[in-house]
Amino acid sequence: MTDHTDYVRDVAFSPDSKLVASAGWDGFSYVWETFSGNRVAALGAKVGAVAGYEKGRTAKGRSANMTSVAFSPDGTELLTASGDHTVRGWDTQGWQQKYVLSGHNDEVWDARYSPNGRFVVSGAWDNTCRVWDVRTRKNTYTLPAHVSDVWATAFSPDGQLVATGGGDRKVKIWDMATASLVEELGGEAHKAEVENLVFSPDGRTLASVSRDGALKLWRVPTTADRAAAYVNPLMAKWEKKGEFEKTSEYDARMATRAKKPNEFRQEFRTKMIAAYGRTALWQQFKLGDYNADTEQFQVTSDRFPGTFVLKVAPRDAPAVREHFEEANYREPAFDLTTEEQIKLRSTEILISNGTETKVFTLTQ
Image (cartoon, rainbow, N blue to C red; front, side, top):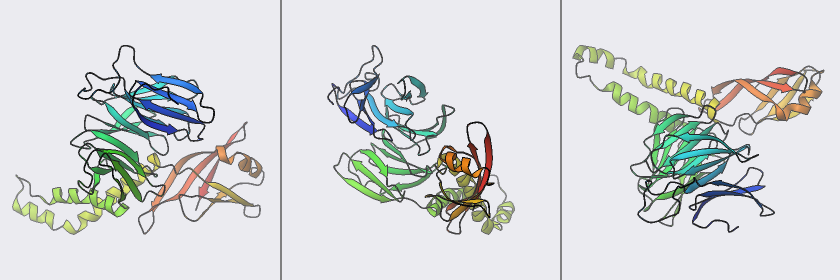
């Protein structure tokens, strides 16, 4: 595939591997059929805009270069980032532009979908990382990610964390529940710009690659690390005596100090559970055997341990089995295990047989 006339910076396969997309400094994102090599789309280059790589040029002189491509998890959209400061979503059926995410004030260098496709994270040469809600097309968070250009972004497999890498040679982890920095990994372990990041499938390890020629593996922060990153700054601020606060008032406040960490930790747990429902791809279940005597299907999940039960009357059981893969989910109730891992307590499942939709409750 030699259609590009300049530096190719990124490539991505569609979820079913039938398509492969590329991003180039010639101002185009091309899409090909993987097995035939036939080109099916050419996206990009604004009329009159300047593309191509020239050392010393800034965003003022280069506005059409394509910098990254990513398919949505369901394969219905292609995401492109560009030197024109935008992120664009394209329909993979007709290859028409669906939306533009605008807000960065310099070249957008990387953009990725969350695992459930609801959010997009982008990093730019304005030193910020932005998180966008795809449904509303609104900027959810703007993170002051690095003191130099943001070159790389990535969502963790559960959508709870965002990783960024920058021209300042640093790798950072951010919390989607609180928009706060969880950890700076390794300080300046890299000796040059961090150009790409990827989480392992189990979410426990992060890989970073740099222009220094090194690939490094990092331990991903745990839930306890995330809680500490939220609680500790709040405690430090709470413990500080106010400029106009009387000593007696301060002493009275300090007398309740033992309770404050738990209060802040509970705040974090509430935020974390709420964020999980928005960011995680939790709606993946496997339908098991049906017991007509108890009127229950056995249901399992790769994300949650244990077995769930789905109460279904015998007359509805055939339709549930036939259409379970197309089910929709709503009203999830999450909880925490003793190890502070998120578990699903119950959710409603909407299953349609083509003529009517019925609501069932999945419980553990």
